[in-house]
Image (tube, rainbow, N blue to C red):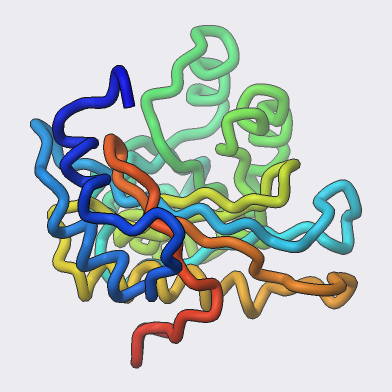
Length: 236
């Protein structure tokens, strides 16, 4: 345990190493962890029984959490005309077209967290695939970020919409809130994510689908969660 902080060791002392906790128990334990100097994120890692190398086993999507993740999300929107006004009215932080694309491409400007695009702007946005794609910022119709309803998309992003995607190891990593949220709120956020993952199970998947689940805070230890734990009532 050399190199671990006093707070980490205190949090670890309250855990049973081999126990699989219910999701509700895990969130209650997290609320009992010693607090740090900043509002830590509460993260969840889910090991899925899929092989992401096969396209028919890719798990990806987006959900709106019932309780804000606690982050001020900066939204950039590619739009023009009436859609530009709609975006500004909905609270977009940046709205434009070729001017913003040029700033991103030539100046390496990335002072935003999400990108939304009206369909008629994909000719402009498509040229940014090589710079937005690796950062997970490329708008995608399947995720609701390429849409004629730009106002609604912005509101969802601001309200706590998160994207999930299985990595090459078959694991989905997501933040489901800040430690300052109530245990019930964290429970409901995590339940919505797990429910979405269950619904997104690829038909090509064989054997156990949800293999391992763990929750943790930014600076705290991981808590093993029973993959069969009931979801929060009413959360989904």
